[in-house]
Length: 103
Image (cartoon, rainbow, N blue to C red; front, side, top):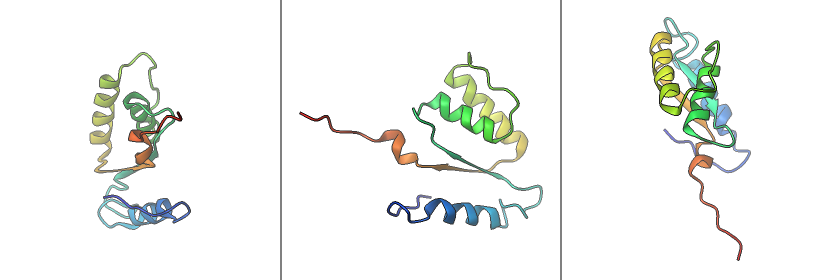
């Protein structure tokens, strides 16, 4: 799902409230919550995003020497262990944004 609006449109608040109160993944879900929210780090990379997700999941220690693949393998295991079924990444458009160079 994508939520699109201009700056200050309260997109993050809207999605956070919807997840928090959703009967299947929210705080009142059996064994819940089953979601994690995170913002794209800057600079954005697969490894840095994986590390943010591990932090948000309460993972005790993120090893700096892990590569992106092993980081994401750990994320997948962690999410499975916690029953996380929904991931909300805020400001995802920044990850693939292309900027024009000034001539």
